[in-house]
Length: 234
Ligand code: ADP
Ligand code: MG
Image (cartoon, rainbow, N blue to C red; front, side):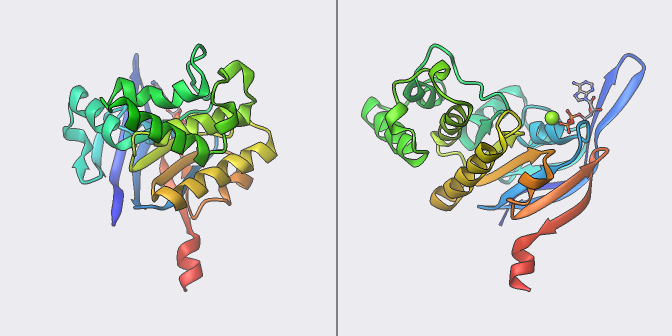
């Protein structure tokens, strides 16, 4: 089953008289429970593409279907609801709330977006803390955690609302190489455990080899596709 289908997808930004085709006729599809990377140099359209898939931005043309919804038809309110229900986000600079503990950062989406009763919330947060190996740091604030630990908390936060799809825009860009690999491994483990689809972007060609499916972007469109699962089945 395809979770995301893009056909001739474009996003044009206009600044003054200048038009930038940030995404320029991208075609791809993402299967449920897959582990996918978008790879390309800076400016190739990775962030724009992830923002479109995450309903944070509106396509200029083409079609984009996410979880059977035609994204172009959603207004702001419907898009926000759709995101809250289905999509988790992981960022390059972690984006944790500085005054909240690891536990509270993970709990945050459940309080803000979904009205879960307290005992169910606690059970879910503890489950995620364990899954990402951060139980012992539950009461630490972000400034008491390493970069890798912060990103573990962010991975847990992205999963806490039972998102079907997690989008991670350059999640390893602020991590050293060993830590970067460990975070990618953690995301893959979470995919295995929860069946969540993970889509990440990177400009690091070493990190990209950890993905099952890789889409290489150049100037806003997909110039090549590598599918290790196909190769394994061939
Ligand atoms: P990447 O994430 O691969 O570095 P981006 O998606 O951020 O690429 O950007 C793709 C292109 O679109 C770049 O040329 C960038 O300058 C341009 N761009 C991105 N966002 C905007 C915006 N809000 N306004 C104008 N141009 C933008
Ligand atoms: Mg980017």
